[in-house]
Length: 443
Image (tube, rainbow, N blue to C red; front, side, top):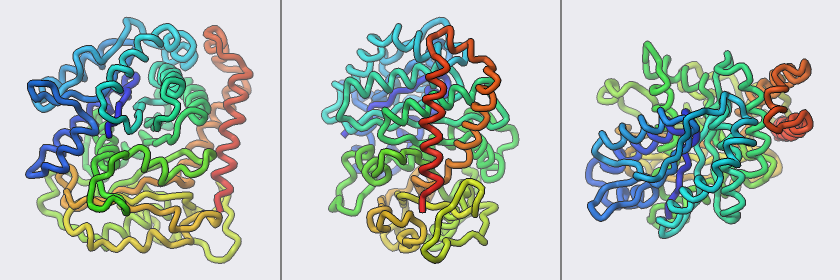
């Protein structure tokens, strides 16, 4: 089954390009015929000449980034984008969610829907749709939300995963918190699952683990793409009987978002290191999984600086608040192991009931995927996709900052003139405050 990816805005198109590049390189590494065939069916279609063409639609209101992505893919010589699978305009959304959602989205709805329809019809079987976008600007967030709404209307029974890049806390755009609130509140009603990467976290990985001195957006996007690829590449599920998973989006959603009130997913991967260090490093599954489990418990996205003092709470009273103990309660976790000796890995530590909310058994809350094929040159790697309290604090901070601006009516007129009222803001705040409350009460 195949995934159709919709890349939206500058960030979405840059992350999307990096993702396809990593997936293609990984699939073509070494003697991996079955794995490679499954990966290519999932993410590419082949022309009569044997060219790999990404199952992707590229959308932006400015042409520059799309042109760069198309050119870089073609120059790779391994894969390319479709010749007519993109759409751009001459004028952007001005970092204004309302401009993207109320103006550009409806104005260009027909052409976007047609581009997606063509890609869907190229699939023998559709696994689902993945929208890659940021929440800070105008096109990725505003047009991305509108496009997701259209896709939900047209493909009501298909799985839709939204991948969101969260802006730096210090600020990329003055109204980024408004745009983030409006995006998340709307997507919560439309998407089956929302997978989030925080720029601040990824930046620290680039600096502290990859030892990159002058970090670019390309470096950040490369880390995000590596983690996404480690989730989406073929793997064996518990009941797959030795056949690679057919519907990764459906199985991801089924494993992690069992309740409509909890859709926020975070991800961490171990190990992460400069490519120059890989040849001199060896890893064991017990060590990797011990560190990854503690990263989950202490809500740390890197193996450096783990707080080993954090332990699962004991006893029946386990309720936490945003300002309470730092233990990170999970609703559900998906562990994905790739590489050598993968079947010998002992994962019982992730089945501990103390890690999970009391109203869901750990047998239902924990899922495991495995693949004996090493991923992206790592001999062994483990990825954890978690529906937990990991995003509770950044979400609460973002909503709080947006509310403080709204209370003084700062920049509200910029949204009102495009059709977003103060009531729309209030509805979005109410929606996200309910999400915050729900995650706070996981126990």
